[in-house]
Length: 248
Ligand SMILES: NC(=O)c1ccc[n+]([C@@H]2O[C@H](COP(=O)([O-])OP(=O)(O)OC[C@H]3O[C@@H](n4cnc5c(N)ncnc54)[C@H](OP(=O)(O)O)[C@@H]3O)[C@@H](O)[C@H]2O)c1
Image (cartoon, rainbow, N blue to C red; front, side, top):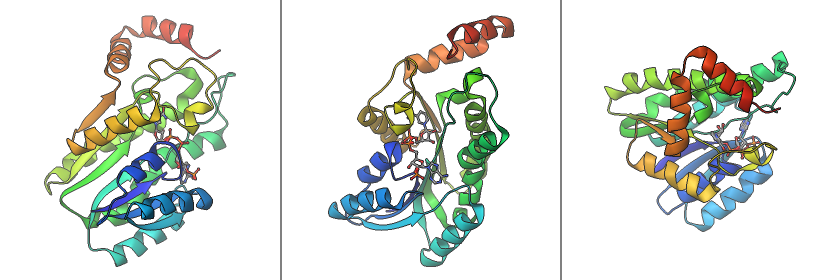
């Protein structure tokens, strides 16, 4: 197995990388923090994997293209690409996100996905998988995290089209929409996170969805259903409800 994972230095990406660390597996691990990538690589190699690490900011699209071109020269195929790297800007209580922060979120959570895949899609063969890590936050938008929800909703739109495009070559597109999972990202949240899952539980569910080639997997189920119901409410009712439960 040859697998590329972005955001492999911490949280979900780190746990997913270690899950796939086995003999006969080559891992390409990307993130910015080299020292953390080195730690993950050390553990992954101890488990028998061959590991290459790339310290890169995925929103530096030229640097990312150089890496993906280098990988495309080295490998003639990839079995799986897991686009997991993501950020959320601090929940802005005053309502407005600075343009530079907004752009950063869109670049990292959304545009970097196409920048990553552009040179790598030709390496995918029948049975290969592209896994995109979206979020339940893509379904309804809280006023405190407009940039994050926008980036993830754009990602869902991208996933929808790319799934159909890849289907003719029998390549699976798996879009994952997690609820709250314990990670350095959620550790920063000071508000109550409904249905919060521990990292192991969250990552196990993601891995199972990948194994089953789920087209779209939103979890935990009860939180997903609740969010779906809210999304179908009349706009005024929904807006009032969202305002009531917004981060103050
Ligand atoms: N945890 C949750 O509750 C939850 C829920 C729904 C969706 N998600 C999504 O799951 C993914 C992983 O999040 P997480 O919870 O594991 O958060 P995390 O612990 O903060 O991990 C984020 C990962 O993305 C990498 N990353 C961030 N910005 C990057 C950049 N510009 N260039 C390269 N790598 C970058 C980070 O590495 P460096 O900092 O070293 O670059 C880190 O490895 C994200 O896409 C997030 O939106 C998380």
